[in-house]
Length: 98
Image (cartoon, rainbow, N blue to C red):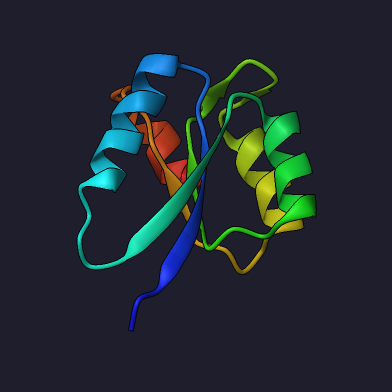
């Protein structure tokens, strides 16, 4: 069975977005189509157009900070798994995100 997953990666850093695309391209267990958007507004528009199988979220977006993005994404895509990706060492924010 060759499953193809649609992954929505919401990241405003081109370098990090490229790194995630590289990691995803190395997966051999399944194939995936990665859609990258650099703002929450663009991501919400993408979700309205096509529901992804997985959302990867950078919490430091220019148009949404921290948990605001999670709340808006959950409202539009409540059943889609969401992975909160951050390079910051903020345990309080991580606990709130959970």
